[in-house]
Length: 125
Figure 1 (cartoon, rainbow, N blue to C red):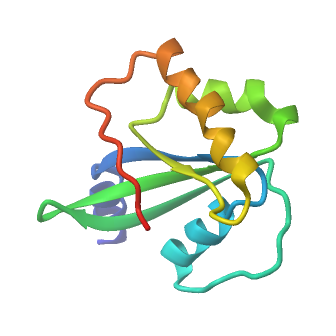
Figure 2: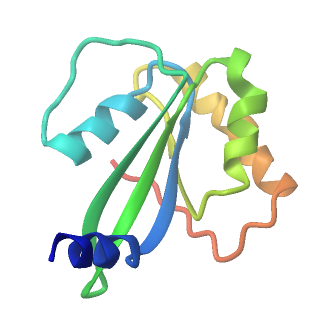
């Protein structure tokens, strides 16, 4: 019976979402809030962490794989490699740090390098 459950979980559709933005803008905090319903106030720079959660999307059980990327420029090449596998992207910036908003242009530039189809942009306040 347990093997049937594992088979069912692995057969769920997998959607890859990538968190993108400058360092310290809250990518990890938002990811952990979604995953565990907890807010983390302490900032610890991330290299790259991956989280997987079963959710309901359009009435169907699916798995969402969230890649929390490094915002630091040192990791730009690694981050760009991750972009190729993403289906959805959350581009974050800090409303109290204008430089992080200006840096979104650099992240959006990456969109021209990869074959993304059906990208929908939205700004949440």
